[in-house]
Image 1 (cartoon, helix red, strand yellow):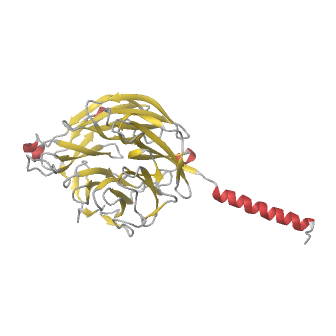
Image 2 (cartoon, rainbow, N blue to C red; image 1 turned 60 degrees about the vertical axis):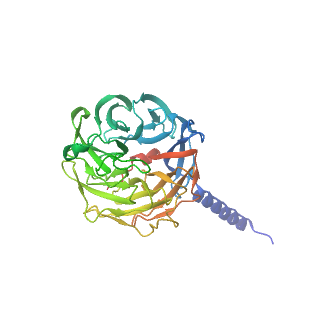
Image 3 (tube, helix red, strand yellow; image 1 turned 90 degrees about the horizontal axis):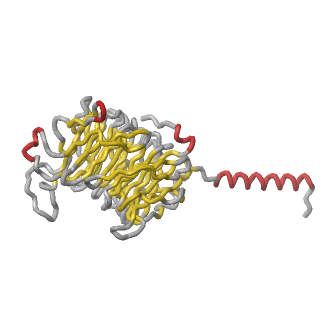
Length: 407
């Protein structure tokens, strides 16, 4: 059959339009970069490495980004980023170092400066004003230190506090405390540290104390970064593992690994904590990490034993969390690879959640339903990483860095 020139032109135009539509639909747009801290090898003395992944704006799938960089030490355990997304800090437990990287526009990391601690770093955080880097290290002793920041460069210690039970609990001041988590309020007014009392909770070993095992220590931040302890620490279950505070500075939440629970607190004007009503709240097996979405509406908790993520919706009036619809402990759309120990929400749009899976040597990805908070796995998840990933964090890419997600 023969075609007229007009028919041929229409056919070619139609094919061209279909091809253009296909490539447009398949175009990959990066909205964020996700950094994962892991080991270059499986041995205990293997050097740490930071791997970079690009986030697809449509599917949330991860693909390899900028080249890997050395973490500057062994066993990277925690990461923090400045609020302008220009600086990344990595805590290496193996050689007790904190390494500062500048973040390039394409996610490329460049080593800038390093400090060495006397104790082993456990968790780090940067305040919203980008003026202090908080580091909790320990045990024996457990210490919270505020390091001054100047254009991202780590300066001298502005203030330091040794964690010990005090105030109404001074009788237990000699107990050994194991620090586990750290969170700084968005308004820069206070810092909170979770720890458990090894003298009172020591599975497989002896105990010498009748104190409550789990604690949150609160410190207000004064002029020059001076830390001042609140009147009393507050009880936090048996073995708290992580803490997160919401972007409106009204609520704090702690995961209790030993009792499979989530504990909620109201933050008072003085930065003291009061228990939320009807708590604590059910979590999955051995909850290990926690994050709150940028809108302050949802909480996500990794369950290391169940290899899953538990999503919660926050009552914006009371702060009480409610488990969302697809939060079964095992199986289903919120399952991760083996033993998730850290998680992050991408900051550009706040709609994708990623977990670092320590024994799975991978990152699992989820799409966040902005209405219900429920999760669905992203395309091709999980994504392979180096050995034993222990921390994950995200930054927005390009123009997305100007997009604000208001709580």
